Length: 117
Length: 114
Image 1 (cartoon, each protein chain N blue to C red):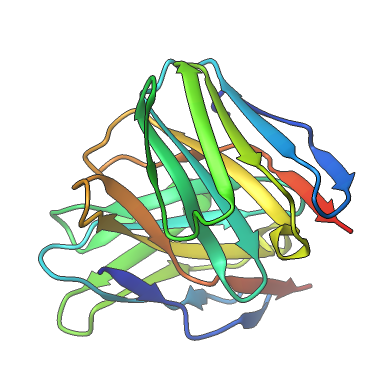
Image 2 (cartoon, rainbow over the protein chains, first blue to last red):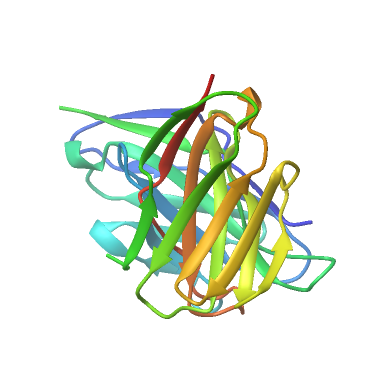
């Protein structure tokens, strides 16, 4: 089965500094990778995805992610953090059901980002 | 935001009672999903649907059943609720079943079972 891991439960960064939220994956074949953000009392919001093509993917709110096949990583980045970026971030990978062949998502455990003013 | 409405948004009930959560979408998407979110586990798939009356189990389906009689509605039922089912439940929809399109999420139902 496909899986992703988010090695950091919590990331703190000062406002204006660059931020990185880490994600590593384990898949057979080509990975379909996604990043989502969750604000308090809200559902997950899609930020960006990597399916194929350029290793640097740009998404919503100034976020980008770098796909690195040799390191099996898909880290989320932003050049200059805002206080409003404080939220819970989830990495996810396409997971194909062995029983039905359906394409579902397997989510990481999440990383809480706090941007300090 | 995608047109997804979950109801109720909050519910408190007692162990052993049946509970039904509703997900309603206005996007006419074929694929619908139910997840639960728990600290330390992220989101885990309970059941999903790939069309009207077509459903299948996810990673944590024990104790849950689903039904989809219309494209727009996907119901999650706990036949006899247990305290271990206290969680936040999210519904999601997707236009494509190819895995290359994102899922879009509702705002969740916070369920407490006493």
